[in-house]
Image: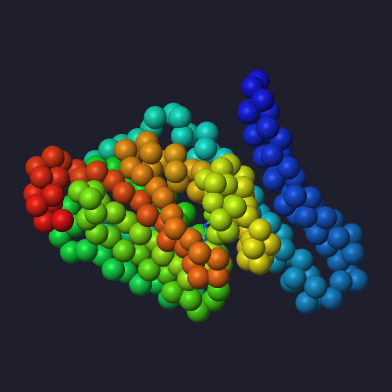
Length: 237
Ligand SMILES: Nc1ncnc2c1ncn2[C@@H]1O[C@H](COP(=O)(O)OP(=O)(O)OP(=O)(O)O)[C@@H](O)[C@H]1O
Ligand SMILES: [Mg+2]
């Protein structure tokens, strides 16, 4: 086993152990002291068990995504990017009810040549981060346009931002940065690692700009579905 694999397994085991220990602890407390625990506390403990189970499911899903990254299981087809964004947004809106989500989607945007499920996974990760690392009530804007003869998708937030010295860490596996929202929110630091790998597998690019206290803007670009389209759009843009 390579050192990288060993490191990965050791980090994953640690990430698994924390929620499992908590689930076991609260289940044991409930089982052993059921009659002595107040109803309110019972509810609170069961809530923690549910939250930690969700955390485990999220981690296992992300680990599966990482392990599938090199399996080459992609189904490329013509994708209407705006349409896919409209599909993923309601799921995230439902989780972040106090945030405002604004779509600025270019009409007549040319199609891209992508694996639609993977594209939706990319958008979910970026929009989820934008909402997760910004305060309640703030706005997340998702914009599509043609930029330098490519399809360009920007997810912009008004959140905590990323410090200059942390900027080279964001796409690394299991890296979560220090800010007042990281400790309050759940995550394993795998989302952006997976996102970057997926983007690059689909001939895309990903980049971001960020200012502490002001917000971040993640930009993804993909080539057009076909060359004729590319030519036509190079005349528009
Ligand atoms: N829009 C953003 N604004 C501020 N910080 C961000 C933003 N997106 C990511 N980060 C920082 O980069 C880290 C890595 O992001 P990533 O999506 O990989 O992990 P995560 O959100 O912590 O967990 P996961 O996505 O695996 O649930 C985050 O923990 C956060 O500190
Ligand atoms: Mg994330």
